[in-house]
Length: 247
Image 1 (cartoon, helix red, strand yellow):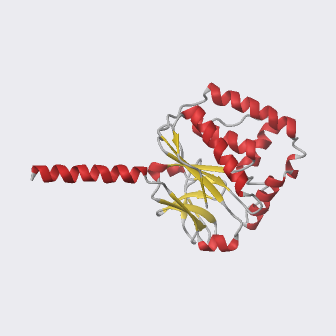
Image 2 (cartoon, rainbow, N blue to C red):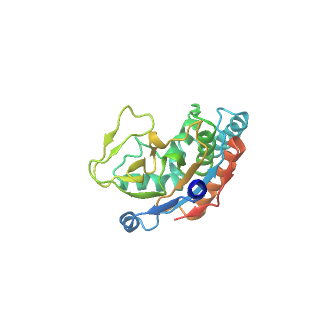
Image 3 (tube, rainbow, N blue to C red):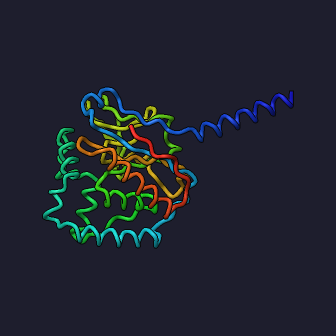
């Protein structure tokens, strides 16, 4: 009996380890795919992270990338970028006013052009924000420990609740808000607000990172953003990345 108990315990350990190493599944619902057949996502996982705050490596990159942005455009010309226009058009189609809720990448670039500081959250978030600034692609990231096996881009049902990062309380969504869910939890309003419950913190060891597409944004742009985010995160936080996938 003791041997049998040990074997069952060992089997449970092996199953748990296999489950931990299984790749996440990222899906786009048929309803969203039907409404926006051009929409694509790129994604990867990074494990074994050691997340600190305000590393000199990230500070140096931020200075370098900010100088590049200021040399390429002004606050008057930023609205003319084709990628930012594509995301703004996508927001309008979702019933979101992009002059009030801007795509994250554009909002960060505008802060630089106005001479405002970029908020420093932690080295992981700061690193992928740099990739977003550089490529113009909004990026979402989630602590894998808070996720189920699948993350799905879909439309909300009426009355679903969402608690975003920095919100004082959850809010009930109307029907057909584009969201990301994992199991029963909403983990993002796509593509501009991640959830409090699955955010990246200093305790995060394994993360899922998603570069968020829109009609008019090609797969190559998403892959480029994912690759830069991967490189900057590893520079700042270490870790072991998976291959980049697309849906």
